[in-house]
Structure formats: C-alpha cells, structure tokens
Image (cartoon, rainbow, N blue to C red; front, side):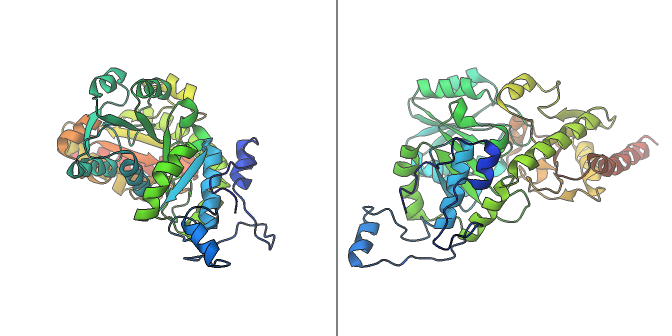
Length: 413
C-alpha cells in the first residue's frame, strides 16, 4: 500500500466519473467490483515489518480499527468528490462530529455553532461543557452575530448549510473569511447537499462533515460518517484520535457506501427536481402557512443558494395553518398520520420520501427556548423527498390536508 492519504489519480476527471471509479484499489485477483475486506487484523511478513507498521514507518495496514482497504476506498472516493486532500470515515455522522470536536478542541476552548442544527448535534455540543469546552449559538445567516460571538478562546465555527430542518443557507465565503481572520476552523455539515450539489472546501471551509447514512448511501441501509479536509489536519489531528478511540466504520458499511456514491449525482439531481415541484405545490396550498425551500424565490437566501449550490436539494419544510401551538401540533400530526405512501420516520436521504415532525422527534430534546431560537414550531413538518412520482407524493399529502380541514371544520361547527 502507498501513502494512506495519497491523492487519487482520477481527481482531474469529471464528478460522475470519480463517483464511479475514484478510490478503487484492486487486489492481485483483478476484480472489477470493489473488494470487501472483512478482517480485524493483517498479517506481517516478519517481526521487523510488524514493528515498522506499528511505528508508522511502513505504510501498510495494521488493524481495521483505523486502517482497512475497503474503508480506504470509501475515504478516497469521498475525498475526491469533495475536492479534499484526505478523509477519515466514522461509524456514524454523530461519530464524525464528536471525533472532529475532540480532536480540534481542548478544555478552555470555545466554539460557535449555528442555532439551527440537528438536535443531536446541539446536545453533543452541550455535553462538551463537562470537558471544559463552551459553546455559543447564533443565527446561521447573521454574520455580525458570528463576529460578536468570537472570544479569544474561540477555535471552531460549526454550521449546517442548508440547515436542518429550515433549509437556511450560510454564506460560506463570508463565514470562511471571518473564521480565517481569527484563526478559527470552519466546519461545515454538507449532509443535505452532498458534494454532488455543493463543495464547502472550495468556498473556504476547513472541514466537511457527513452523515453518510443519508444521501451518500441513499437507500436507508446502513450507518456511516466522514470527515474531509486538508491532509495535514486529517493525518496529524483527526487520525490519532480516531486510532485511539475507535469510532470505526465497518468494512461492510464502507462497501455499501462506495456503491451508493455511484448513483449519488443521479439521485441528487432527480430528488432536487422532485422537491422543487412539490415545494411549488405546497406554496400554493391553502393549508400551508409557509414553505422553506431554497429553490423557491420566496426563500430569503434563494440567490445565495443559486450561487453556491448546483441544485437546491431534496429537503422541503413547511408550516401548516393553525391558531395556537396545540392546534398547530394537532394539524401537523394529522397531515403526517394520513400519509399512506410517505414513510413516517426521522431518517432522511432515502430514495423513499420520509416525513417527520421535528419539534417532537429530531429536535424534541431541545429546550423550548432552543427550539424557538431555531425557528422550529409545532406546525413545522420536514419532508425529505425521494424518487417517487411528485404527483403521488402531493396526493398523499393532500389526504393529510383534507383530514386537517376536517378538524378545522369540526371546531368551527
């Protein structure tokens, strides 16, 4: 094996070609499909070679907790697609966030996080306080608030763009410039767009985080995560912590993710197109108070999304109509409960459309104040659009809206 983080020789080819072929490392058998190495350890030729491997003087494989040929193929392919120098795979997206935070931060450090992030991310950063790492939350799109939140101890900015679930868009270049001027690392969760639609590193980010469980796999089969960035940062800071703590991606899951990336571009294009169609339909529906989708001209950051993304993604959030929190929750649940085609689940990124009520599921453990700060109300529904016919998805939602209208009619009667 050559340098574990050596650049892929196909990096100059088009995205669709790299999604199918980058990272491939054939064995002596000359297999056409990517090989799966289900092994915990590797055999050495002699004691001297074993010593050299353990001492990082020989680039061969040692132990699958931190080096595995199948996992390496996944890492090289994703690094190529993200236009990053290196990648470390993890067991889940949350493992990727935890590994990054623990590798780059220490007691006494401070991080600034967007107030609109995945609920588990919010909880994880709050847990870091027990290790002496403090966190401040600011609105994603308010650059002045980010600047005002900086302290002498600030070492990291953390964002999702588009955000979960309101699809707010960060100005990556502006935020990267601010972070760079203060020697702060900018970490970007690129889960919703994937490299098929957005390249945060090209806009100045230092690290890209993935829950590969979502669109990288694309079919809701396995868990996985990834950290992509500069070679020196990944090799010198992320890998040592990964090696000693072991939030490891399994070889089987890496193989599934490799196959998922082969269709990534096709899926993201089609699902984005479907999402835009459904967002327009929702925007015109009398039962909807507001739609959150960057592809709509009514979205506050539509122009920004158009500039830094190829397409607008597959996540559509919308608020149902209602007069108070109790009615809003009842109406939202009614829409969700009457769906027969769309799956009611907290996951997203699947070829099957999914729907959830963020205030009581993905963001349910946040305090009411934190949910309010993030703009997540009782009437909010998150729809992750899949590959089904948009007409069938809209018809499924319409059943829910009719049930909601029946509730309204009953009250007025």
